[in-house]
Length: 312
Ligand code: NAD
Ligand code: UDP
Image (cartoon, rainbow, N blue to C red; front, side, top):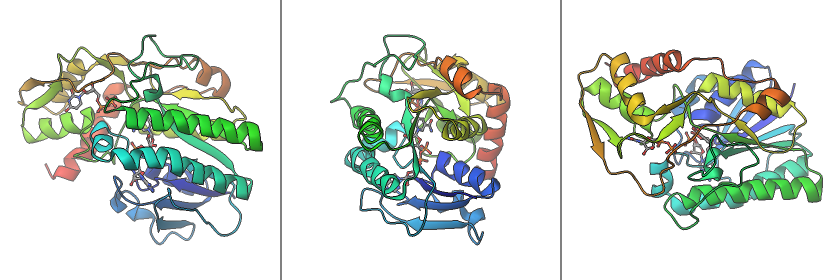
């Protein structure tokens, strides 16, 4: 039995990770300041003898009593709307929060896993993106607070590995979706689903020709788990290479919801990546991992969640 600390554990991905480790029989300590997360995501775990929630800002000094075996650092605003709303908090949790989480890992001799992102590739000039690509990030643009914080976090993680010999892992996570995404987090899937279910206009930014490659949450959690249990210390892309334009995605969601909503076009936010698709050769070879859940199936499951949330 392992003791696992999950920062950002009350968020979308973090809460699914809490479930996974509890299901493995491990003890989970979830640290979250609830800036973008929600206790509803972990309410079902309250009262479980192996689950503990601590409301805490992980940019402050971290103390956890007793042994810790794994630290998964997932705390960070993650939707473009959130990190535009909380620019300083985003920089702080990526920089100071990562430093504190690494410090805790060093003090406990724990294995550390960083939730990095495809955003380290910025608006990529190489397609698809492999881990060797160094990226095309605008450091002073509105997305820079997130991209640069995560790039710093990767650098800090490698420094702790090289200088302190810390056992570290870096997951470069591509767009992930599924139940427990926040209805109003501004990301394309919650926005399109909510709009389609309420019969409101579906807001596609730009002409909708930009692409994303979307991975269902269960596949991602499996990839994170396999990466944590591997001995590979360099970054690994985790995502679904099944690429789709945003306009096509909006049409698919409208159809799945049986909605009469109109698709309307709004201005494209600055620095919005034009294409994004992971090269997952490394994950396949090193972890024996690849996503299994087809887009249509994942979207259906997610739509069910939003139907329940909206009571429609
Ligand atoms: P989320 O907003 O649902 O979860 C993030 C959680 O971190 C929230 O519960 C929030 O309250 C918490 N948090 C933020 N700052 C904190 C702080 N200072 N102290 C304690 N808790 C703090 O977002 P998510 O989609 O679940 O993303 C989780 C992680 O995965 C993030 O690090 C994000 O960068 C990374 N990621 C997500 C995606 C994706 O598609 N969802 C893609 C790439 C990377
Ligand atoms: N997007 C959109 N309408 C929305 C929200 C997002 O067209 O209501 C677009 C956004 O401009 C981007 C894509 O959908 O091109 C994915 O956006 P999301 O916020 O989900 O993730 P990210 O840009 O971080 O990949």
